[in-house]
Image (tube, rainbow, N blue to C red; front, side):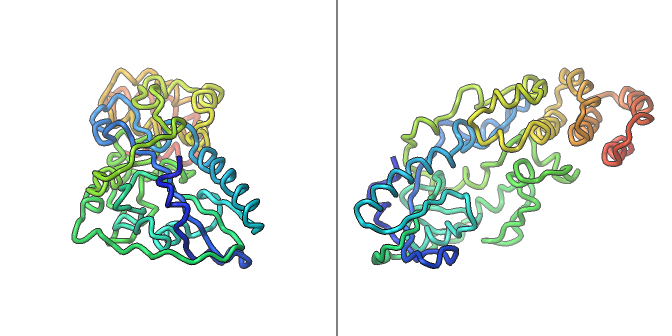
Amino acid sequence: MVWMAETAQRRASPDAMWPEARTAIVFALPYTPDIDPMTRLEEKSVGVISVYALNRDYHDVFKGKLKRIAQNFAAASGADVKVFVDTAPLMEKPLAQQAGIGWQGRHTNLVSREAGSWFFIGSMLTTADIPHGEAETDHCGNCRACLDVCPTQAFPAPYQLDARRCISYLTIEHKGHIAPEFRKPMGNRIYGCDDCLAVCPWNKFAQDAREMKLKARDDLVSPRLEDLLLLDDAAFRTSFSGSPVKRVGRDRFIRNCLIAAGNSGDAKLLPIIATLLHDGSPLVRAMAVWSHRQLAELQEHHDLRETLMQHEHDDAVRREWQAR
């Protein structure tokens, strides 16, 4: 169910991307977790996937719901409609604030007095002319919980996010090698980061998630790094079929898992990591070198470097071997 029936009646001015639109109707869909996202960070032998990605891709789930609502609305009103769920350059968070659903908190995400932080937002633009609702005001006060908890200090100031330092960006959107300064702070986060959302005090009002397709899959809550590092491309696609994790591709995902492995302190992972030193992807090989250096005895690492460096032609991988 879309969060609260009256949500569908909250209106805001549409974005300029569709000039013919007169109104944006903004919806919210809760995905409140049944687990404490912060406790998983203490289990160094497992990978932590952001709670929003622990089951089906929310784009598909939410957009399917909005399309059914839009069809009924268009049939009843005769107006044209378009639906959006984080799939177009639509300023959905400002629209949601103007619609009265919540406000953009100091971490730049939307916060609601009635739903906390754990919800998706989607929009339906329409040519129908509907009176607007009242915009929500900021209720963050002097709270700094979300700013202070960030492992990579991605907030240069309240209401400002440096995406280049954000673990969600680094593990999901960033296609290249992750800079050394961020690897230790990443801990065992392998897809996204929930820290700034999880500590928000407004979550005491969070609505329960009712959409079963968004309930966490047991096998994704705390997957063992040992198992994840063994995934080839086919196994990765099978394991994450229907999940937003699949969008990053196997190589980026294994890159993230190798960083988590290097932070785990678990030397039992070294044989698997050693096989990934020969992986076909330079992205994987480079992080395998870093991960191996974190866990192996110094002489063992040096011996491998002498053997493998002479056959390595990728500059980024060679730089990892040469790093101290």
